[in-house]
Image 1 (cartoon, helix red, strand yellow):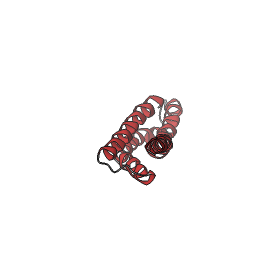
Image 2 (tube, helix red, strand yellow):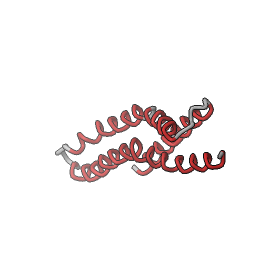
Image 3 (tube, one colour):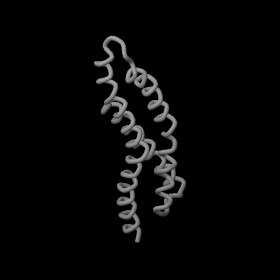
Image 4 (cartoon, helix red, strand yellow):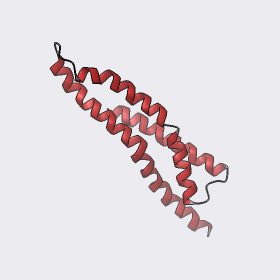
Length: 117
C-alpha cells in the first residue's frame, strides 16, 4: 500500500506542478487565488484515475472480506489493511497532498512577490 500511495502521490505532484507551470506561462498566476485555482485544476485531473484505482481494488478486496471458505481467515487479515490503506491513500492524494502543495507553493509565491517589490 505504501508503494501504491507513493507512486500515485508522485503523479499527483507532477500534475500539480504542470498545472502551476501552465498557469505561470499563460500569465494567470498573479495572486494566491490564481494559485489555488491552478492547484484545483491539477488535482481535478487526477480524480478519475484515482477513483478507478480505488474502485478496482475494492471490487477485488471486498469479496475477500466477506468470504467464508477455506483459507478465508488468513485472506481477511490480508485484505482488511489493504481496504483501509486504499481508502487512506485516496483521501491523502485527493485532499491532503494538494493542501500541503498549496502551503508549500504559497510560501514560494510570497517570496517571489516580495522580490518583485
